Length: 339
Image: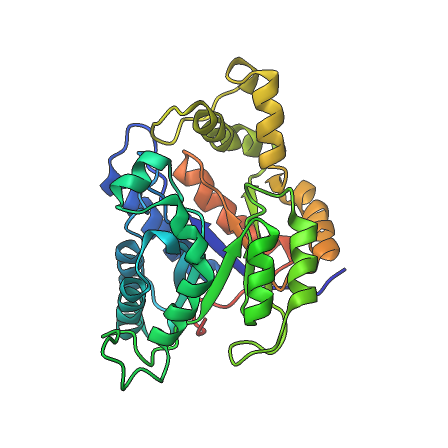
């Protein structure tokens, strides 16, 4: 079996049906605090827009709030969709976060817009902005680095902060770019696993040591929902399954309540689509999940795992975090130790 690895959490700040955004954010803070207590390495938020069931659109603002309510867990973006923003703005925001919370800050960036075409227009952006992704990353590094003293435009805060940058992706493009730039790489296998094996191999094959990283570092994302028994976990996971069905149907709404029978919700075609998208999911009791998760880790040999559980029931999410130490697969920090 592979050695134990760090474990981190990815959250979208879900807003459950019947709850307000404020209540959803309060639950996210509670999750971050529990993740810190359990010993998770990082707590990351993802940027999405025009989705009433997700409260993490203003990602850096929410990260600052989480930072103020936690003590040592690393916090960061998983990720900021760089085509939506000028690199200067991102450098200023994350430079500010580092000024507030020190070296706890991570900046994961992706080249997808994280929304639909109409919302891209509302953001005053264009789909073609994604083509500048490699250049925007280089500009971002420059703005966060040490060599802008003579530049007419500088990031205040941000300059000289050297906030760690990660590349996020679900295709070979991001894997190749991360390898060439010598950056850590995160693959979005929790919702787009089709190219998982190829992307990990591509990243490692193309990796060039850099001032940022001397050897490849891969973090893989997965859905993880633990419960006392398989049936309870599967029941709560129907919230995530319904969310994917609604996304494909272009039905907007808050995080749906779980249901006893998904067959009354989805068609056979939709079921196949969801099963494929969520195939990297570990849902069940500790006893049933542990061997499957161990096999996944042994197969892909990630340096870190990034798990998510975007479901309706807050108690079930907290319970899942509490059960993680029983897996004995991860290097968990004590809540009294620095992250």
